[in-house]
Image 1: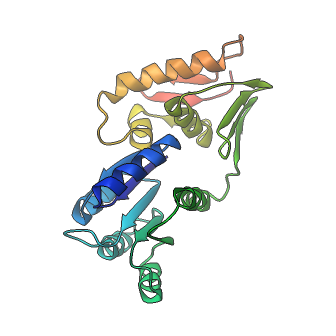
Image 2 (image 1 turned 30 degrees about the vertical axis):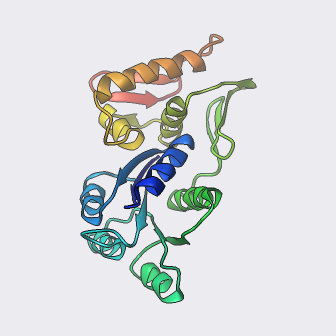
Amino acid sequence: MRILLAEDDPALGESMKRGLQRNRYAVDLVTDGQEALDLARMVPYDLIILDILLPHLDGFEVCKQLRHQAVQVPVLFLTALGDLKHRVDGLNLGADDYLTKPFAFAELEARVRALLRRASPVRGPILQFLDITLNTLTHEVRRGERYIPLTAKEYSLLEFLLCHPSHVLSREMIAEHLWNIESENFSNVIDVYIAYLRRKLCEQGEPDVIHTVRGAGYQLKEP
């Protein structure tokens, strides 16, 4: 899952970015509203976390313009403006949730999970394809009864594949959802991580379910 975080406090922004990355999200951090709006128009984010008091464009205006342009990605306002009027204004502009500073990171994490679940209501906490299961709450991955330890990026890649079974996913699609804007050489990196994931999923001779579609990308498919 890929998140856009707009926060102009350098220390808080970096702290939130690291915390979200530890929870296996790809995070793009920006510090002003205009940059947030520009990125949100170009990149298919799964969630946007918006501070309200941003330079150039405030969070309210960013959200207003996105909704006016029919961008329906979930928006979480994160702000020191905690009075009732500001909360009501934010929700009326199209925000999906509102968290007031200061906050516990555990609460932010829970709200992020809830918004992502709400955006994909057909999905439960367990993703499964044949004998492969992934628990999005505990981050535990198994093939049959065998536990499979994965790195954060391997986990995110498998989660993305499990969310789109039988779909051919191009390298560009995978890069857009799993890597942040600072990453480069997506094609080679993705091929490497696919190889890592295949090796772990098939470590005991199980059939390979990640198919390479020549010239197109990768597909989770029955062997």
